[in-house]
Length: 330
Ligand code: SAM
Ligand code: SF4
Image (cartoon, rainbow, N blue to C red; front, side, top):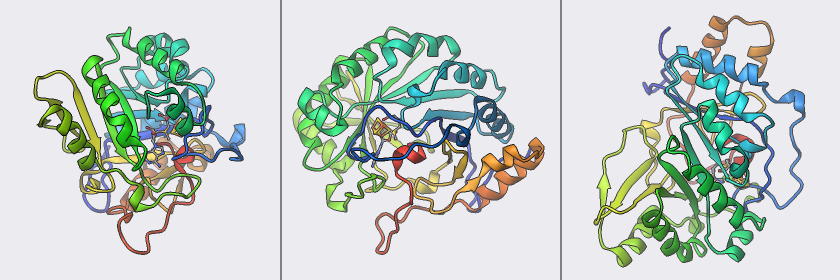
């Protein structure tokens, strides 16, 4: 089949699939403290629908799948889905982004089902500050989840993601940099984006990758850049003595839209061609109304042709997406 190429000539190779909008945390930069309505069961794509869509995408050259949410591990029987997706020809990179709290229970089953890569979100190594940001007192469980993941050599590299917020994250940088040196974890800082349900984001709350790099270099000396794939969202660095890797995902200060190869599917089956899209494409209906795989593929091609050139976060008049991060799938 003809590959998926957008209207600007970018080839799409990666999809992030949200498996639930529910979450057992309430991170301040993502969800409201309370009161977000969950999707109904019948609104959410079934495992069979996700697998069919993934197979169609794989045939169009999309080889990379990341499962996300909400918190993907709260979706019942997730390892069954992982097993279904891992068996699809053409899927050569299957990964998961999680807050880590359920990993102690599920890491083994996920690896057994074919999961090979995992990202765990972790914003603070201090109990009080962790609870402040996640609105849940769960640091020990997350660290235990990471330790459990570490037991499986299949799950490498283990990535730890921290959302960088000015006035908060500066204090976390030394301990997180130490974590990268002490453990086989790649620690990555992601600039805070205007996707929080509380709509409290402002440009001056973004702690940039450049600022964090300077903080780390003041302590450890110059970091050495490691070449990354052109479609990679992260700039990678290692410590000069070779112990530890740090990554910076800088969508606000250094947008990487020109090499973006990603699309997203929400838990309720809406295709989004950008995190900041204001338009969604109803793939769920395309999957449910009797269309053949070839017809669904045509629908996907049409949607992808309309992929946005770039996000406009830094432009005057930027208008936020109507859904927040946990409802989209980060
Ligand atoms: N619940 C899982 C987790 O936290 O890893 C998966 C879903 S979460 C929406 C995916 C990623 O988005 C996490 O790494 C999270 O830190 C990040 N994220 C959420 N809100 C964000 C925001 N406003 N700006 C930047 N990253 C954000
Ligand atoms: Fe939940 Fe992940 Fe959002 Fe935190 S970032 S509230 S863990 S979906």
